[in-house]
Image (cartoon, rainbow, N blue to C red; front, top):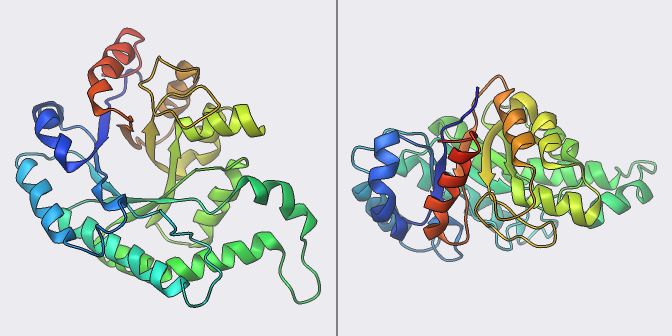
Length: 277
């Protein structure tokens, strides 16, 4: 039922500014510092300690954004894949240390995949390009998934270039684990819809269905990854929120804005539209 309670994705440096807002409403929060290259190979424990210091009294749902720069889930290079796999394990360790229940990771499916999977079907003993990508992703993420299951952390796979939302859903189901679910980034889906022929954003929500555990809320113009506050771009927010409200569960809902200073404007617009509070 609308309106829905909204939280935010923030860097630790932004937590003091929004601490009271987060705690007063016990809103969803995603700490994003761990996506930065170098954090998980450096003093990530210090980042966790600083975040926990600011979040004393916070009892809302908590997640982190995991690594993604040059961290392809379907890494084919046999020397590099173990490095990527270890980085995801460290991400889960950071999430657990923070007390987070989710870690966002990025979909491996590209625009190129959509247009070329059909040109690379199964041939003899060779799997199709689609199956090969799925197999690599499942194998690479296996160590992080084992750690996530042990720590009570759910890995949520976010759409990036995805044109077919069902591909990502099939990948999540392939793990056969309650610790793998789906994430939707509304701006990414809108870009894919406008620029590459994907369905509209609310279709992504409906396709994910009961697998949807997390949503990045950001507006865009369908051309680039703007991360504008809702109401500034061309996402059909009423359709998106109706689709979310129709789900049997409530995914984490966090504003992921390029400028954290736009959160008040985003919330004012969502409140006026009767969509969020």
